[in-house]
Image 1 (cartoon, rainbow, N blue to C red):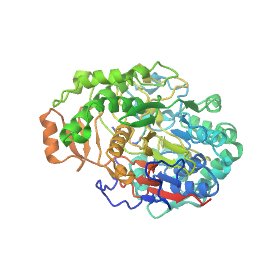
Image 2 (cartoon, helix red, strand yellow):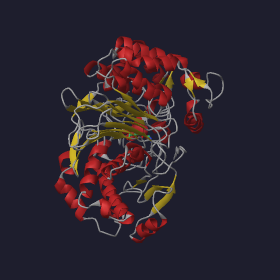
Image 3 (tube, helix red, strand yellow):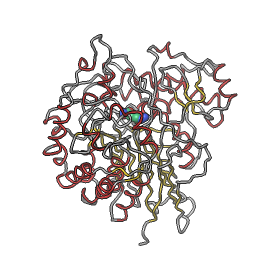
Image 4 (cartoon, rainbow, N blue to C red):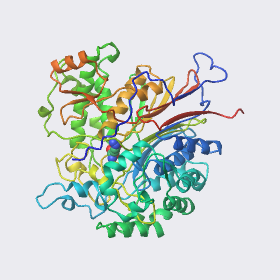
Length: 575
Ligand code: DON
């Protein structure tokens, strides 16, 4: 199966925070008191141009939500490998005016044509080509609707103002960087199947190369139409017609009413407590919040800071194993299936799972039932924003695998996602991330495929942070380790750089980045019965920002594994 590993350069925990920034207040806050509003704005995202676009909009008088539109749309332009307006995402918002947290679900939906049978080959096996390449792999996009929704409900500026930086960059172009070139190389055969894709990525006759400029005039025009006409600029009219025609030309089936009928959903975020932190995170159709609530509440039974690395890793892994097992069985779109969220996230259930953990013996995943599976890859994108009013955004958006389905609809610049692979297209058959599912996550017309995207906030008496990451099924454990690191007192840049480990029940193995576990820790874990892959390629691309309310400082952290990311802080203009 396709393993789309992306070799990102790795920096150790205490790496010099080349792209982090800290803003010290002009006058320290009086000791013991917390400030009501931050001293400026902070943005962390996976590309310097998207962070700069967000700051441009803040300078123009926008709030965090306007900035989120600018960052999101710019990422769609400069990181087509990871996300785009042909895909979807989740936006977790904190509205300082009302104090309300809201989860904007802009996940793609299944078209009616996407029956389970449509994804099987003649032998009844999963047709992998259909599930990850071309029109059948694409769900109805949600991201454009999210941008419209953010502008209408939460922003201060017109949508077209917030989209202006992305439109400019799409039209004028931006320098191609190594990850785009490498990703193209690994998806080349698929990308070059489609005439719309060739027109964008082979405009000069050769594949994208570092140092060249990628210009996307059709995408600029599509974003302009979105800015001028709002929802109808994408989901009805000329763009919609071209999307439908392209899906049809390549052998897929979407209906006009499926595009025009797309709606974002506002959901209550999932909230729970962990050691003095209020955690606000992603509800279904993400599996991330439920899994994190399970894992953190299991772990609350121990003081992790007092444990040696092997014991700590053992307990964290055992908690992960149990949460990922439940993900497989119970999680899906709550508008279509009953997800027992209250039970799965209850303290009592966590206590029961905790009691099943042996202090120094791994529980083989086979005893929790299931099948082994392949893993992983490394796209999708996250950004985090806090503004000077205390508004916050934690957003993760995606086209799923590298360059999504590979299909650009001619004349639109829109690269369609391959999110359909996140459904359990064939019960019990692992998807590209090695995670599987059953009835709860079976495809159905209008249903949203289960996600691992976990945009989150954590807040204590003294600190607020927004955090999130890409990484497929590893997103949940990336965010989880980030929260544990904040709890250990690390700063945002250290949180982003932290070496990673992961366990997802199946396959029954601890994945660890090279250097994440010391050799003696690996030995101790093996003695407890764990299988450890101790030198995997680095993964993830965590972007986090934090406001230290007590010291009144803002700080951002960007993942050093991604050399083009940027965290930046801008002081509020003095009043
Ligand atoms: O929603 C999800 O969980 C996946 N489609 C995210 C894909 C992803 O993170 C790809 N990168 N590794």
